[in-house]
Length: 168
Image (cartoon, rainbow, N blue to C red; front, side, top):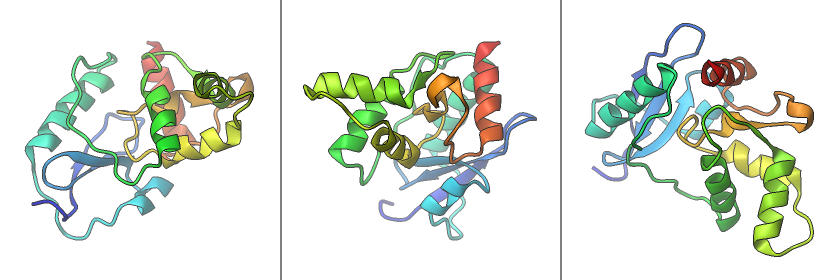
C-alpha cells in the first residue's frame, strides 16, 4: 500500500476543529486540523479508509482529549525533514505535557547542543511550523516571547484550546 495517501477524519470534542489523519497505508504520515493552513501540506484525493494506524492514533487522541498524556505512541514517520528540522522536532517532542517553551528557548538549547554561539529563533520557528504531525509532536507547546500565542498552522483558537486542555 505504500505510496498512496490514505486519510481518516477524527471527530474532536467541542471547542476544537476536527483532525485529519494521513497514512501511506502502514504508518501515520500527517495529522492536522481540518481546514487549517496545514491542510495544504497533504493531497488527500478520494482514499478515505480505515487503517490500523488510524485506530492507534484515534486511541492516542481519545486519551489526549480526555486530558491526559497518552502512554504510547502510534507508529509514524516524518518524510522530507532536513537534519535541522529533525533536531528541532525532537526538542518539541520532549516538551512535557502541560508545559510550554518559547522559540527562543528551543533556539538556545539547540545552539548549546550544536556547540555554536547562537541559533535563530526564527529558523526554529520555521522548523516548528513545518511539523506534519500536530499534537503528537506538540508544536502547540511552543509559544512566542512572553508566552504569547503565535505561529500555529492549525489556528490560534486550536492552539489556545490545546494548551487550556493540558492545564486542567
